[in-house]
Amino acid sequence: MKEKKTTIGQEPIRDARTLGLGKMLILGLQHMFAMFGATVLVPILVQNQYHLPLSIQTTLFFAGIGTLFFHVCTKMKVPAFLGSSFAFLGGFAAMGAMDTGIYASMSQAEKLQYATGGIVAAGLLYVVMAAIVKAVGVHRVMHFLPPVVTGPIIILIGLNLAPSAVANASTCWPLAIFAIAVIVVANIWGKGMVKIIPILLGVVIPYLAAILFRMVDFSVLEGVAPVGLQPFFTDFSGSVAKFDLSAILVMAPIAVAAMMEHIGDMSAISATVGENFIEDPGLHRTLIGDGVATALAGLFGGPANTTYGENTGVLVLSRVHDPRVIRLAALYAVILSFSPAFAVIVNTIPAAIIGGVSFILYGMISAIGVRNVVENRVDFTNSRNLIIAAVILVCGLGFTGGLTFQVGSASITLTSLAIAAIAGIALNAILPGNDFAFGQTEHSDSAGNLGKY
Image 1: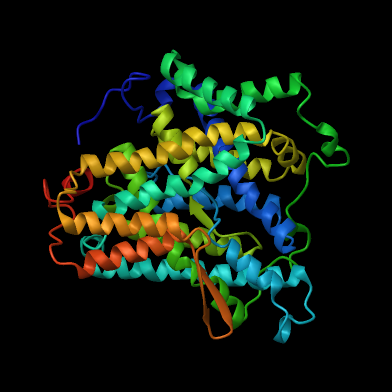
Image 2: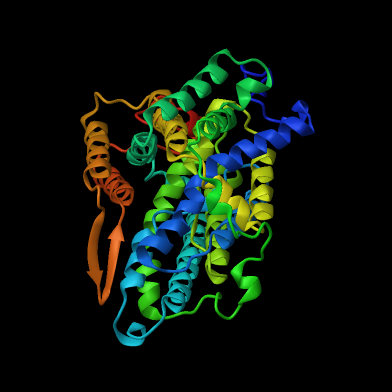
């Protein structure tokens, strides 16, 4: 692949150091804001809905640490941020409601420890999958994941997030539309630095307007400490993971769904940046990075990690593809995890602003999927390809509540995205006519960017 120029607003910027340290720090801040809302929402939901005391500080700390570890595993090449995974919410719900056997008289805090023990096991399944990929070769694995499968899955990643964007925006449409307008104006008509930080501006400017119109409640800051340690520092024995087969059977199988999402995210990032990260540094490395980050977080009482589509959306808009910027966001997350007050301040950002920003970010993810299908020249006059894409899209949009089934005494829930991925992979393997050869095929039903490199 030829090296591209780094003219702001025209060609992607591969080395953000050319912009200067100050601008790099601001770009890192933009990625931090992009991931923050969804990352802290997971512990908020787990606390409020399932009554398990999952810590926001621990979540932020291991999002940052996990991202840095992921970058080390992937040779510092992949511009991905690892935030807390929503795929495991069903598992947390099941663990919170467990009231048989050893869980009958157990406190919710201890149930969380067993739930995070299951997350450790889920993370280790990633490592097993990485070993399989390394042993059989990425070309054989990706033979079952051509763009006719990964393209619609990428589209679904954005579409599945779309309802949350609308729900948040609907809390105050004028503020949401204002956030969208700021992003559009900055990205289309902005010059220099303004053009590459549209998401940050789309948060900050509407937030200042919300403060001006008294739409922000700062009373929630009363009594909140500006600095504080994470729970595993202050109460290690009460935070570290515990292990039980029932909890492992609840949490670990969710890794199958999360791995499908991981492959979709890697395809999306590869398509965005114009690099084949599935081949170099390799799918086995990205799986190890994600899996070990998840296991490490679970070991110390945090949620599972996953690569974040929100940050992929930022890559599209800013056109700054330097992984160093993501690592800055990770450092911010680690530093801010020591400040309970900051988490509260960020949570004062009106939901409508988050909704407006999400309108753009989530739509961008789906647009990447469409671009992936187009650039890879997937032939939809071919009935085989049409059937695979159709089933993937209907599964992904139709199973809104996922699919729940029993394995022994454990209840397992597959997300709609996992169902879509499994259905697409199965059909691609079963139906005749799969001529995709990863790294070799050009101009076939799944040729293009990922096939050329």
